[in-house]
Image (cartoon, rainbow, N blue to C red):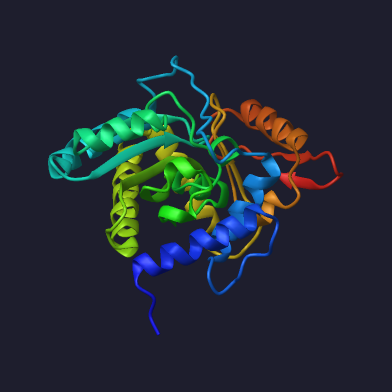
Length: 284
């Protein structure tokens, strides 16, 4: 038998209270990802009565992530007007960098719980929430109403999706959709993931020609077979490595490889062999 949203929220609320009292949570009631986040939140000593989000007002408002998210949020902001929904962009550590809200009541609520630019909604500070779980697990996450660890966040639902750097594949931030409880979690997740993908496309457009050239070289080198491959951007800290290389490269190896690449310069056919820290010999 299907459980409607209100009954499900009540069941999870009861399971959460039992969890806070030290009882085991029922796997059939609380999703595994939420149980895991509750456990992490409890271990971190997160309080449930207040949202203790740290604040750092000084941040780079012209960062590549902020510039990439801007036009996406500008486009979606018109659709949000008058709705009980909000779009939020954070950096990879959960610090809120931009926010667009559809209506004043929700905006005032978000201000009260510090879900605003300059504050961090990382799981380590706020406990279970869409942004925190998505960044912790590096995958899309939906946190509905009573699934939140904090009492103060029970009135909203959130869907967040990591934003990945299209060159390195690393998580650069998160796109979060927050609204009053009610909308379909599947719809919320789809909207957040689409917005994140749109930001990733703009990030690629903002990347430099040398970064794109390095990515193409990496794709070409890794297209056939699974041999270890590392591509380094000379003059930058950009490093691309496939899983075969990442398994045995150390920080010292990166330094040795970078120095070898600088020594070769831009000679297209120059090659040399380099011995890494573990004794392995590689061709550069």
